[in-house]
Image 1 (cartoon, one colour):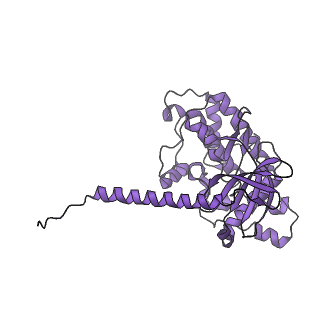
Image 2 (cartoon, one colour):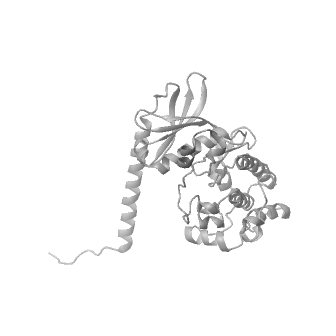
Image 3 (cartoon, rainbow, N blue to C red):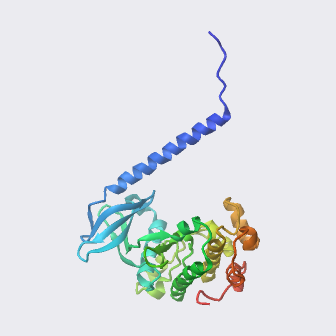
Length: 318
């Protein structure tokens, strides 16, 4: 009998660890999906038939549903019951409901109902948008200039409507821009969960509720939103973020559509944020050789992405 031991290669250990982690993640996702499916076939608040799970995550689910009396298709977001003890998350959900209910614009997905289920779950009913995201479109490669202009003009119009009400989206990105199916790139801006909503301007609730509802979800100096589209001033916290921060994100999106690539070629979050703050995006011909972009259109993206908010356009309408 030999006393020699089989040597275990570090790469084998890493590979096995990754495999186990992947299986564990897959199991968790499957468990979440199975939990989400329990609501399918039920009726919410006596009027919304839950038909299908569209997406499921650790905090909640999105369903396709139908208003059983009006026979109208809707999207239904439901927070999991145990999130009731997470006031910041619930507050974001409420903000999305209020913003979606009060911003009356064709390029903003409307919120039509908000409530609480018997098990403690909060639900939000939204306009159902059939289509794809701008993210999916960009993955296919550079967007022709005329098409990019058509899309960005609609996003800007939606932002202008938000900003006139004092609402700042704060998480503008391609995944939150829907392109409706069969409507020639008709835009719907979605997901106002991180939005700044001036409750005192769009609601008649009392002063105590205003204070509670406008409490900061993220503390001073903390970064929020999506790093790939975050503005340089976000480094200083929520107080420094305003309508012009949405314009910065719009500039990044326009650049990405035209070049077919993000302005900064890194996926490291810290490095990406550093570049947003300190580096000028390279010309599109450098970032994406061979892509032909009209100079005037590239100049628009460049101005939107200025480091100093005062150097950007004054408003989304401009």
